[in-house]
Length: 172
View 1 (tube, rainbow, N blue to C red):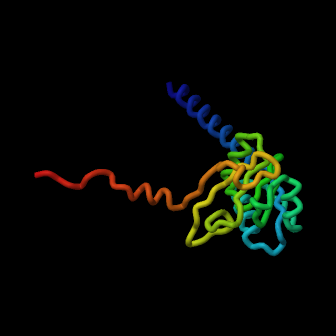
View 2: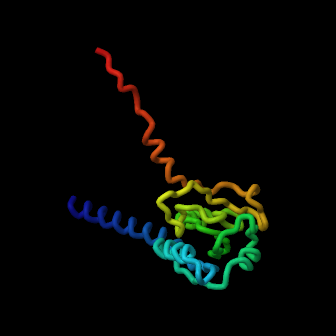
């Protein structure tokens, strides 16, 4: 009986380890980041990617040309553009969304977070903003032609927690 439990436990640990290796395999992708050599928020975004297991090759040459080549419209533009596994990543897209994209493999050009919203990775702020990660499905798509891939709202959970659970009135 003890041997059976040990074998079961060992098999569980091995299975968990394999799942961990498989999930981390996506995170070890190499991502090329095209940015300005002097942009601090781009450097912070690169650190964010590395913290999530990506191998980053930084190209300090700006991003306008690569954004155009990748098919990302200037209306979706930000301060850096990245390429990973056939996808373009424009702006301060969280690593978790990139990992999801690489796992799901949708037919798309890539993801974009236009502008530079406060509170996005690399743009940390004491006053974060809600922002959307957009799925760019076709080359040259403008903002209106994209779909929301994920919404990041730092205040959503706080609002939900503030809802009253029920009546506090008691009858005697």
